[in-house]
Length: 316
Image: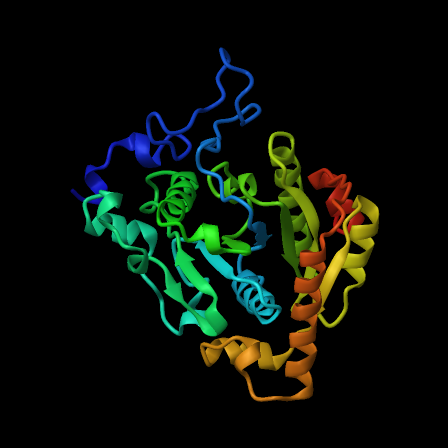
């Protein structure tokens, strides 16, 4: 069996496998997905007692760098961490593992989609400072939705009992939230963090992501935790937007060359040679990890309409 042989119910129609999850229909108005087809969380597939955080932001904004360094910061604070990359490029964890690890979909395909034949070390890799790394991957391009992939990844981790020994789960999710599938990590998360820069495109994406999180919050426990200002010397536009809609910046990572160099070295910032810039960045991630462990108050956010946001940021 290959990916092309799998019935469309696995990847298509909101990323559903027949019998696993449901979709909202006119006859059943109580399922998740108000006015749309969305993946609904299988009630039997829950992560458990670990604190779960989902990291979102505009494509290329630095979500994987943020997620990996945040995961290490949690581990430095004595937490047992699993990072799950939710992107077909499967590059979320390469600074932790020093390589591109196979995705869950890759290994499932290798056993003709018989998950009972898999071992834990077929799809879970130990990264720097003990962070356990998983790349969920995604469906073949143009064939469906990522919701199934996220659900199957969590199911495999539970079947192999990894999550029983986990304190923190960090989901690193691709790009903007534009469909129910890649909003699926929000069904597991306690808090969602939004990575942004001090520019129009990043703030526009942040506004849309906030709307998506609020939509999921109607049916799940996820709430907006706050904003991570990244690659920005100044935060004036972020601050102005935050004040207008009710968001809050939890960490600020300036546009430091050492962050760029850490990616080139396939390393987290916690592995770089000591310097004032390295220490500054490390302290921001540690401060953020401590805040998330302590628990952040859910934010009451009112996103703007697109036209209003254009006007607010000075575009006509």
